[in-house]
Image (cartoon, rainbow, N blue to C red):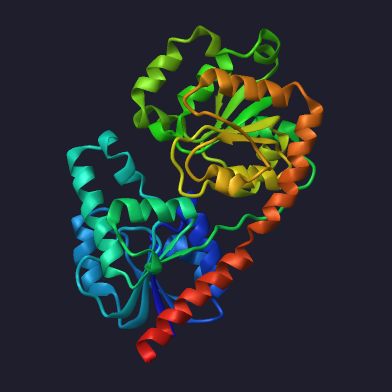
Length: 366
């Protein structure tokens, strides 16, 4: 079977991790052609690579896709920006991780709203099969597009087990200014990630915890400013946050395990997620996890996390205090997390993706 994959997002934080792991898992099973930047696809030299660097969400990408997709059995779009024109593929597969752009359309510009509505709905109609990453996302896709549920297959992401050894805190400090004690936030800084609620909750902590713990934000400060300038202005107005926030900037993959391991607690206050990989990554690295009680997170985190209402900064603060102030609770969360991540393996995810590809092949052979 010849599969062509749009691999332009191979280095994106969430979709890139997903794509890298699935491609690695199916590499020996099919003939695979990748569309993308050859410089970013050096780990996949065994595949045929067709240079394709036009930006996603652009008119230019649509014209280019129509021309460059070769004849194939299956064309796989790992994001919802599918080809809108006819291509030389017998079948199409799309992965829709979430429908944030439809659920939170009021936060987008008119052009962004129109694009999301047109392209996501086109993705559900033009694709022969849809993969999504949680039952929550499946229900949201059905809610906002009215696609048949029979077309959708839920396949959870995987998470790698602990790989790093002993943490060298001096190395982390020299590379990223990581302090000895900290509360960890990982993710981009778009409004739905709800970072402000975490910072407001931090301000409600008692003086002992505020003097003992800083907040480490894994992400670029520049992207944070442009992503939510009002939030940055609010932060600058809070005297108690001065010298309490550490923006790491870009973090190499090989250092993320150590940053999770050294954290006293990982907090994920997101208002909307399709899956939410960072809490599982924290669990894999023996870091206690607390998360918001909405969207997909109870489904993904199960009983291995403590939950809070993401709109209630007082409740977030109380939950942080519970973990920081009670070693028994911390240890229980760590132990539950170690057991819980065994349900999320890339091997299982790859196997289920293979089933989808094979079903599509059977459908055009019969």
